[in-house]
Length: 228
Ligand code: BG6
Ligand code: MG
Image (cartoon, rainbow, N blue to C red; front, top):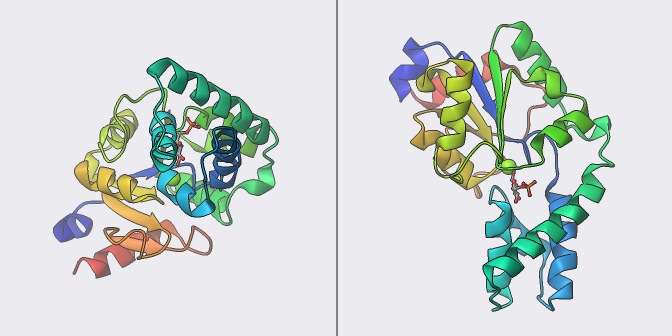
């Protein structure tokens, strides 16, 4: 990988949504918590960490595992719908102020510099969320949970993103807050910038606390240094 950053120019930037662009984990938590309470399953904010980057159905299955409960496929489907209806009540109230610090500036500047930008998210609510945040126009392409059939760490979402941007995989950087997303980026042959801590994202090529006060050039430079 180290040769790639030196020889090849980065042209495509692929962003996860939840946890990178906006903190929706707290709303996912509130919605799942209500469902868990109704089923008598103890569900904590600590447990919620396990749901980051995980699909809606898999999230429910993890909660059922915590409660040692099993449900039919039909019941699972109903519960997922119930959870989403509740989640949407929070999402519909999202405001533009909830874009995480520095994200709007980072995206605007990177676009002006000619980088191609795509969203690569497991969420089926991605378009609604970007609309609420007023940043949908900052993305050239949106690949979300409605477009993909395989969950991260499968690289499908990022491969589709790079293809739609018409940028070779090894000219892309992925920004991710979930370990499964870092793995998906690497499985696609892309650089992975982790948003979070080394404890949660030990495999990231570079770690950042967020996208505040940093430029894309600085990130490319740091990736080079890390890989020397
Ligand atoms: C991911 C979140 O981005 O999207 C997960 O990190 C969530 O927690 C998944 O379960 C699916 O989201 P949605 O909005 O389709 O239920
Ligand atoms: Mg995420």
